[in-house]
Amino acid sequence: MDVGPGEVAHVGVAPPPCRFCGSGLEHVFADLGMSPLANSNVPGERANAMEPFYPLRAFVCASCFLVQLEDFEGSEHSFGADYAYFSSYSSSWLAHCETYAERMIERLGLDGSSQVVEVASNDGYLLQYFHGRGVPVLGIEPAGNVAEVAIARGVATRVEFFGVSSATTLRSEGVQADLLLGNNVLAHVPDINDFVGGLKLALKQGGTITIEFPHLLKLIELNQWDTIYHEHFSYLSFATAGSVFEANALRVFDVEEVSTHGGSLRIFGCHADDPREQTDAARRMLDRERAAGLEDLKTYREYGARVVADKFQLLEFLIGLRRAGNSIAGYGAPAKGNTLLNYCGVGPELLDFTCDASPHKQGHLLPGTHIPILPPDALAQRRPDIVLIMPWNIKDEIVGELSYIREWGGRFAARSPELRLLA
Ligand SMILES: [Zn+2]
Image 1 (cartoon, rainbow, N blue to C red):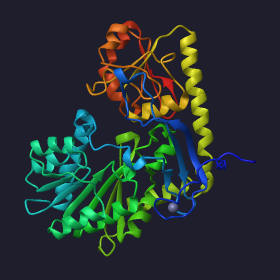
Image 2: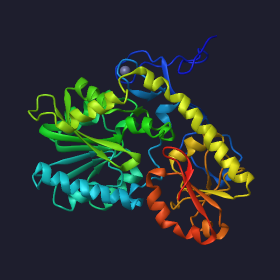
Image 3: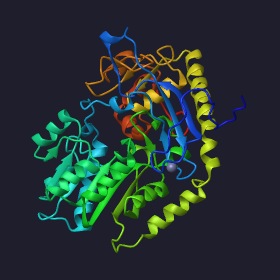
């Protein structure tokens, strides 16, 4: 069997059709092997139990360039309705949300007669800023325990998944949005056409959609392949997001770059027949993606080799530090850390432990690698020589918070694009 880089070895299950356009998928973008679900931290008492591993392989569609994970057995059941992630924990994210709310109220002239609807509204962390300024809000959130927190702070929330079916119900009840928004949800939905079709139905005539998602251009340029994990089905360029909107009688007319998650896009959408014209920013973004090769299959097929090179570099880096007698701890237990550690095969022999501020994660083991998760004060007690920051997207914030490690000569290391010791 002759299989070159970026080609599929024909052993196993045939790849599915493209989630968006239905074309056959033939080209691998990144193959991260078998991996446990990223957020399935293992409670201490389950340390000796079996853990499921699933393929973590991203394909690119040669027709629409949507980068996407293949389905895996049980994927539709894997992400429970109750989970321990409350986004209110990050102060930089909250500041980002408040600024967004203020700007949108001003830009769209929202007031007490407007309706803001947020899809995947979590614990109401964002809608609270509209609600607090007298703009009526409605959140749609599938996780019941998280929605309860939102409702307790006065943010009206429905517990359901968003799509054509729930949007049809909203519409029949007379609810349509002047501003319809979704942050970090577009990439997480398995059926992207059902989701965007729902946006079409839930948007008032003349209304505005804003959607934020991590930018595929950044994933490629900055080697952010550790942001590939099972919950994250699609990896979108601006151009492909525009195609998905157009296929659902919507249009993307503007774009902003935002710094969250290592580089995201906020796209602005409207009905296809809306008179608003495409902005210069939107045209420039399309040009930039084209110049970066995002309309060339070769760009995607060559990416996998960079992932392998990164793995070698990470292992050489950690082994070199260890051989020189350094102790190494991690900081954070984000999904991206699990992709990194599992793909690279890094266990407690290289990384003694990691720390996380979330009490929901402390006292657990990272999935697969079984690196223990301790409270942050373990750093002061154990005084590691090196602290590897897993959530590199907020590394500046973490370096500021943990500057005390320098008291014992501790140093930080982080990725993005390449792993190095920080100055
Ligand atoms: Zn496609």
